Length: 126
Image (cartoon, rainbow, N blue to C red):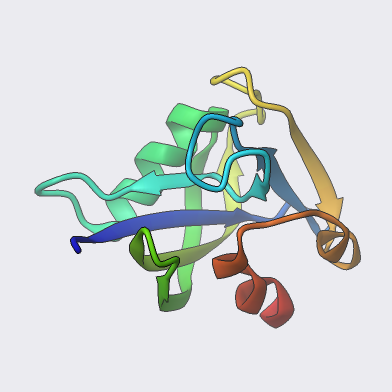
């Protein structure tokens, strides 16, 4: 089974809220909430993928970020290398560029949303 590299942006605004989006129902882990992100393309570094995906999905450009967590997760049908970046500064206004519902929630509210299992340890760490 091929391991898929995924880069994820955990965007935190000045009021300590985090940007989340609802995954489309027709994709892996569909109907669950997520932080913006996606697959690392050929000849792309994980941080370049995070920057690209963040802009493509919600129109933000990260200007200050750091690797927050890197982990491997096996869903049985997919194996993922996940790179989570904490984005503390950005430019732009968050918009749903892929028509997905998005919202800003405080750290304590993250536990109330149904995220993919691979995200749970990162949410706990936040």
